[in-house]
Image (cartoon, rainbow, N blue to C red; front, side, top):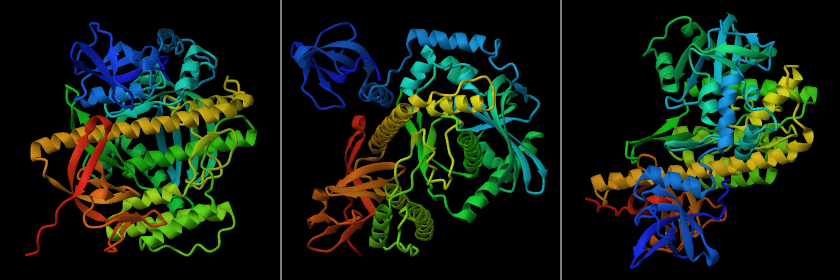
Length: 580
């Protein structure tokens, strides 16, 4: 969090002879702002309130309230993100970038530069912390290497770099910007596995027979990625719409086959949750306005990387647990039986067919039941063609929240007894902890993390992750609203949209509509009835008519109001046309 913890983001306005600032994201009194060259009416500014909070001094100008990029930047600052590294940390990162490769702390590093190695990331990615190599060993057999940037070589325990990385704990990704965990000389340069450059890495080597890992080895390595691929490109290759040269073709298709075997095993066992989601991507023009958005859905290329990373994470966690090396595990505890029983009731209230789950007496039975219910929801959505967002949300609400802890409690969502986060040390501090633990376990020149510090580290990094998720969600909402406002200006504010109910609360329904927009349909503005939330929290029912607005229902809506800077959209039901 930034040092100016008492600072506020305000909108500057001229009121007679006085320049005033009104809190932009938070409620609070208007204050008089001291005039200086940075203070201009109509602009957003970061101010420090004086005594009594009735006056303030401008610390920084932040841009215009009608420019999406400026508002998102202001939101990040308002939520406590620093938006810059201390000068000493930046300098330390630059020194580490230049000196560490020349003075490698691991002289026994294994040279894997001759392997056919490549990365698969989003087309817009700037930091590449994982790469893969793969070769076929015969029918249903593969050797897979998962290479992860050796951040621990650059970020030494107890240094200013390490303390700042721990303070941040995670990178925060918002539309058009990122608050990185590590400074740019490391995150986008020395620790990024860019093509055609020698890079220090930690590699997990796995020999697979089908989905079974028959042999695993861990190395501190020197690698050289030869090709950068993006997800869309890989999907085109798999569809036969684009060619890829050898030796990349053979290695990519071997990785595809290995990932397919892991997917088949997951489907066969049925212990993992079936949760499909989509993430928004936004494009901005040069002036900072949102031009367009698209939903990034999970495709085969995403699942390829996901399965190989999960396999590597699991193998690292198993080794550390077997050796008793202190580390941070990524745990997802099994749900409570009562939460699963409530999920069954909620699905039943929406007429979603569910398998019999019997009497749930243990948390393992509850976990197995949730996995089965998630598959039933997936089948129902595929059959009916609607309700995925809402029903998936119900499944997730039945679960406990994943977090970091030094206790190996397993990962119920993945159906694994051992799991940690190892594969993204550029952007997650717990992964850096796992790297240090692994390298100490294999005698690769690192000390094991101090067990006495890990309980607090687990609580802190879990909290920082939750904070980051809220900032990312709210920033997405802001970007969506600015894009919606632009569309309404071009097409008219009387435009109607097809929507789907994705949430219900006592005061109304949340509706996803159009091309990825979301808004609130207040129950007080629903015509002709008084609406009450049912006991299961899955529908609003009219007291007079008995009509219901249920999770997953299709609605036709129009926009009443857009508050783009605050990410809020108010909706109305579109009037029904008279029947002919």
